[in-house]
Image (cartoon, rainbow over all chains, first blue to last red; front, side):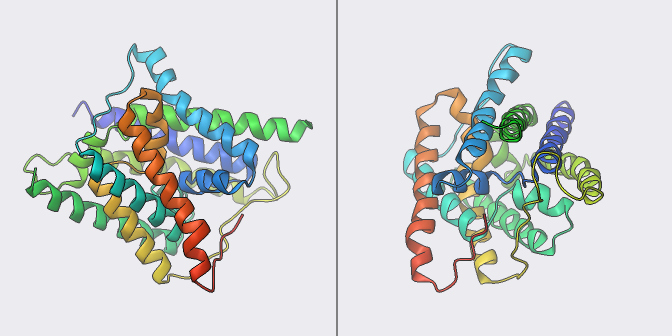
Length: 135
Length: 152
């Protein structure tokens, strides 16, 4: 039960961040979109500022809780490379990820984002569960 | 630098930091936690990360409703909304490919970028692969299809 409250509170912060970005800057908080546009050279300054903030997040967490958040990768390096390529290609092809489709898309009642979210949740669960058989 | 651009930059920095803090607090930044959520057959399934999405959407909905009452955002002249509405093969195939990658390593784009803070080489490897995948799509794959449709 102790993991539910931080997860809920952390999630609410993600929602608040998305609202701030939308109301103030008129931008959707979609990380694959922000990072993708940064790579493509669009709105460089604001997108770089967001990513700097994103990387500063764990340090702010450490300032409050005294240590960096737990971060353990179970996958081997070759699997990590394949996973990274799939995440990169898939989020650009599908125009969004867990934040853009999952948070802002659902909050905007977008059917397209609902379909995307259900699709990547199902694909993620099937993949992780199948991979779990070999762990 | 004009005042509006400075305001937008400050907002982006603060929103990014809030997002990164939220990812750390929620456990989303930890691939082991994410795999524990996605692996429903492990016998010790951890559903807590569903509260991350639930909490985020619950806060974002009233924010979006508030934004609907504004003619334009505070520091920009218009809302930059996605223009695509079609539920097509690109959306389904892309989301499925993303989901497979997510399920393999437990990283999606936000947590992966945020986890660069931990300085672990394997995170940099993932981010390098993800960046390569994005550029492969944006610079190569889109040339092979007649419709790119990327919005700014």
